Structure formats: C-alpha cells, structure tokens
Amino acid sequence: MTTATLAPPHTPPAVPAHRESTFLRYLGGQAVSILGDQVWYVALSFSAVQLASPGMAGVVLAVSALPRLVLLLFGGAIVDRYGPRRLMIGSDLARGAIALVTAAVALAQPSVALLVVVALAFGLADALFLPAAGSMLPRLLSPAQLTGGLALSGLTARLALTFGAPLGGLLLPIGGLPLACLVNAATFAVSVLALWSVRPAAATGRDATDGVPARSAAPGEQALAGGMASGNAAARVPIGAAVREGLRYLARHRLLRAVTLVGLLVNLGAVGPLNVGLALVAAERGWGAAGIGGMLAGFGIGSAAGNVLMMRWRPAGRLGLIVACCAVVQCGALFAIAIAPLPAWAFAATALGGLAGGPQAVLLNGLTHAYTADSHRGRVASINNLANLGITPLTMALMGFAAAQFGTVTAFAASAALILAAAALCLTIPTLRHAHLPPTTHRP
Image 1 (cartoon, one colour):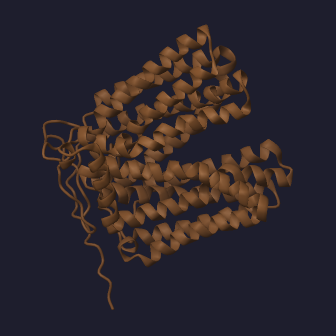
Image 2 (cartoon, one colour; image 1 turned 90 degrees about the vertical axis):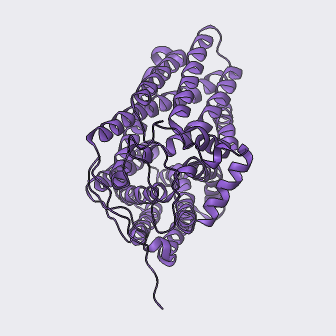
Image 3 (tube, one colour; image 1 turned 60 degrees about the horizontal axis):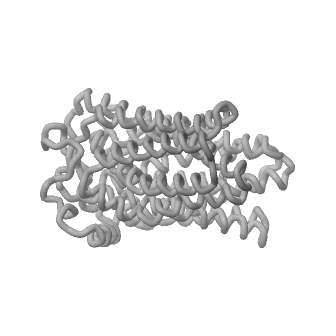
C-alpha cells in the first residue's frame, strides 16, 4: 500500500528587497518591545514582593494571565476581521499609555491594587496583540522566506528575553517601578514606529489545503496593506461564531491539527522540567542558584545556536522526519538533565535540548504559517497561543507534584515520554511526515 505525498508547492517569484527591509524593521521593533516586557515583569513581581509578599507576587502575575487566556480566542477572531497591523499598533499604544499612567500613580502612591489593575489591563491588551503578532510574519515574508525569517525572529526574541530581565534588575534600584514603566512605555513607542513604517501584504482570501500552502498577496496585489480581503467571512459573522468556525477549521485540517498536537505535546513535556525541574535538580545536587543559572544559560545558548543553524539550513521536504529526530534528541537531553552528576554535564544536556528545540520550533511554526488560510491566521495563532500559554501553569504544578510523589528522575522521565510521543506522531501521521515547505529563493 503506497502513501500519497503532499504536492510540493510551486517556486515563488523573487522577493523585492524592500520586503526584506520591512521585515527587519518589524523584527527590531518587536525585539525592543520584548525587552521592555521583561523589564516590566521583573518590576511587577519585585514591587508586589516589596508591597506585600512573595505569595502576592505570584497572585499578581497569575491575574495578568487570566484575561489573556480567557479572551485569546476572541482576539484571534478580531484579528481576522480587522487585520493584524492596526491591532498591534492599537495594543502597543494602549499598553504604552497604561505604562505612563502607572508610572505617574506609582510616583505618588504605589499599591498592590494598582499592580492588580495594571496587570489586568496588560492581559486584556495581550489578548489582541499575541494573535495579531502570530499572524503578521506571513504578511511580511514570502513562503520561501518563512524558515529563515522564523529562525531570525526566534534568535532575536531569545536575545531580548536573555537581556531583558537583567536590565530590569539594574533599573529597579535606580528608579523603581516608575522608571521601569517609563522604559516599557518607550519600548512600546519604538514598536509603534516600527509597525507604522511597515506595509504588510494584504490577505488574498485564498484558502489553504493539506497539500498546497497558503499565500499572502505580494505588495500591490491589494491596496489596503495589513487589512483583510473585503469578502472575508470573518467580517460578516458575529465574533462568537467566527471563533467556533476557527476551531472547526483547525479540527478539519489534517496537517494543522497534527502540527498543533505535536507542539502541545512538546510543550507539555518541556515546560515543567525547564521551569521547575531545573530548580529541583540543582537543589538535590547542592548546586544552588549558580547551577540553575548555568543550566538556563546552556538552554539559551543551545536554542540560539539552533536558530542560527536554521538561518543557514532550510529543509523543504519530509519535515515530520526532521521534527521527530529533534524530538528524540530533546527527549534524551531532558532525561540526561535529571541524572547528570555534575553541573557541566547538566549544562551540556540543556544546551543539546535547546539546540534540538530551535529547528523543531522553526519547522512547526513554518508549517503552521505556510498552510493556514489568510482568512484564519489570527484564529489559528490564538489557538496555538492558548495551547502554549494555557498549559504552562498546569504543567509546572504537575511537575512539582510528580517530583514530590515519585521523585525528580521519574518526573523528568514522564515529561520526556510526552516528547517521545510527539516524535511518534510525526512518524505515524503521513500528512505531517511528508509535509513540505516552499523551496528557498532568498534569505530574509
């Protein structure tokens, strides 16, 4: 019995140089915004500890996540109706204004109530920004540029995350919460300027099938950059109905459904060990905070190296096999962390896991972007964000519970088994195993 392979996509035409410069301006603005977000989260948690207690810091951070998780699906439908660029600009302007008001109030009378209100407001804005950002890249790059563009995007985000938290730690002793809010507001201004300067391609309204990737219009194919096609069904139905239709779209699409499930399993397996497990291993071995920092540094270095690799190596076919191999390596590296006898071994294991995770994330995201219809990009992005962000608290709690009940090594083994299950899905689902991306013609 033979298995039909996916039809390889056509080779796209050459991409104008201004489209690459547009992407780089957008990427720079987002990197600065991520940097500011990290400064803000450090300031938020530190201020909550100072004003109340460590437990209150956890409550405030949890409060910031609630509106984002509850409203993400609706945010994706709104993005598909109005287009990502205008909503990203609106979200950045709103968050910048919130940061300025917070700075002014914090100068006069900081309080836990202020932190809770601001955390809720940021969560509401994030519910629009995240799906909008998740649907933006295909409007800026041709299908052939997606792999390299996603790799560069992942690298810049990793660097911004790495330097953002230490920057927040440096600013807090100087100016406290007001200064951190002012810095965050400035980064939103930079992001708005970058978004204002870019002109993403408009949606074509063309649907995507399991065998043929979707395509965004080239600049000039539609007059309104960043907007949705006027005939888009999302603009004619209630938001609730659009959300339900987006869920049905993803459930019916064999490849996108498989990619979403694989990504969910990988996150379920990796989030707990990386956020809770490293601290448990360091505590059991007596490595202290330096041990945790070393392992996190190893993962960051490995992840950055994986993204750099994908900027040079851009596979086009049988991507499920490649993702499966990355998952197997990630699985082994994860378990090796739990049994590492020395900090250097644990550093090497986390670095290897990060190295495998970089290509894995780029290819899974590339498939999602390439095969999602323009009319559904916001909703698909919101579902993926919800799957990733929603499982994080639950996974960390389960990791702590499993380690307490069965031991750290067993908890790591269970997490690694989830990633191994993701690898098995990549090999057993033909649509994913033979999935293709458009051939490379340009580097972004």
